[in-house]
Image 1 (cartoon, rainbow, N blue to C red):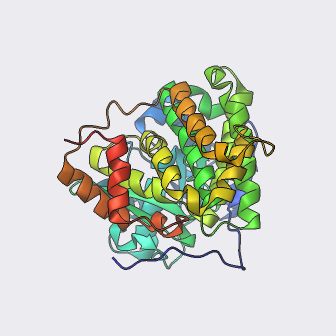
Image 2: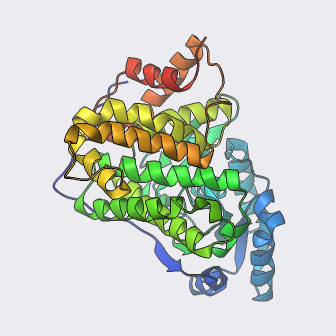
Length: 392
């Protein structure tokens, strides 16, 4: 594939949905839908969120407020092509007028895919790539129940083709939800392992947005604020379940990181993680966290000044220290974070050489690679996989 790293530009922009924040803000969803003249809603959620009570709460609340609500919750942890298409059929058959996503990144990505198919027709994979979704989606609201993906505010969606075991990335302005509700209460029921993967994803979003070739003064504000708030919250991650402050800090850090990467895009760690996660059907947060260190090593020479700023905001290096210590300090910090969060490579599999070659080929096609701060060859991508996944 012919590709080139997108250079930094003098011009920049910022695209975000309308944001509601604060404990209990999710209960404003009905008012917002009514302002959009929506009376028939497709509620997209998953079994975990439904059983935890958050999906049921929104279902009951909206019905009580007079809305016709159709529930679609047949979702996987990595949303499948077939699930998106089934959701689009459900939307049409029930004459829905808008979509409410209640869940983590997988739920919200699925809702985006449903919206894209409903408004644009065809198959969801027709919209894989950059700026393929040309018509506006139906009204789309997102109540995120897991801090991490920032799917509730971004123009990204990731959908898995279960046949090829390939994750496809959709990037279009039309995929940005109309409104996001940042409510820390639903985060209280998230399993700790899932919360850890989400926390890791926040960190990688902020780091990759900070060093992206499309980073701008606007995205920098969000990326660096995310890093500062994240580093504070992660020190008390063990209090996640009982501390609304910790959950609130991670939720805001996720928002800041999302605002940064949705507008500056990402880098090689995400390109590699999409390919790996689709092949092995693993949590995205685990994949991206374990791949980041190798990518930082490849990128460092091309973006040393940016990584110095990252290290300062994370608190692992100070400007008065020797600049030669930045990379070792940052790599040690990333290692310690994985240890703190309990993220290992134990279940990443013993990938065979031909599998690594296939994954590198897919990663090379990923849109996130276009804004990596330096060119990574297919051989470089294979090396990154080899360092993380024990090859035979």
